[in-house]
Image (tube, rainbow, N blue to C red; front, side, top):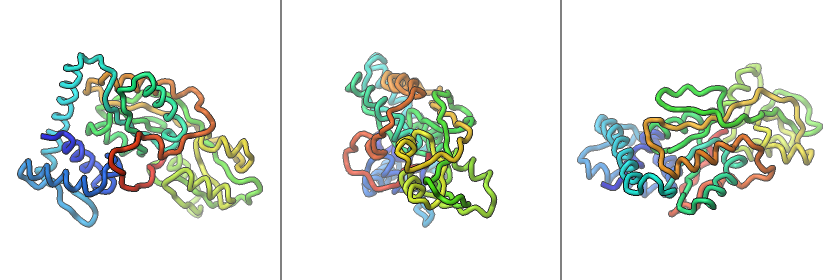
Length: 303
């Protein structure tokens, strides 16, 4: 059996969306559909009900998901055993908030690739819920999440850095109750919203660039990591209104799985993430290595 089909099964079971699955796996949607149909034919059972609200697991599908995790874990153990567990090569799948993808990880991942050319890091933006689910179901090797604390039974979360958070506005902007924030699932934005009056005007976007552009134009205020607005603060196109409580960056892994040498190399690189990153970021779209076929379009996850 082609284990790629099992990875597609796990991602689709988590997202419930063929489009989201295609984006995460760097495939076109038709390929995801074909892979699911092929797996259903191979197993002789319908794994998903295709409903208007998305793909939902059938009873057979739930059984398949449980066993697929075991198969993929066994596959990784086999590869490690054959390589002697020491070859620093292979794929490593990591999810992180958009701000971490754009401002904290690119140079560290580039350093890993330079030192270990056999490693390919697949980096994708994701909110906390999706990232934890990906580590748990085995479609991700590692996840980075921005939270006050992480409660994830069965997973291991290690604090690797602290991210300062700022409330910012355009210079000369009249104080009001209009806020442009990242969409729900962004921990620091959601925490800020809980403290706002019910009458506040809140617009949510799926990308830091969209939020920041609205605020630079003087349309309102926003809450973002300091690293995401450092360039604008230095240039004077944004001003600091006040600081907010810092949020912690956690590295999440599954202790039940034996990490490959490639995963351990990435963990070592990420452990240095608390050191200041360069002010000028790479484009969020450039975080993941170029996929082999074109990915379906999807906005970045909050964070």
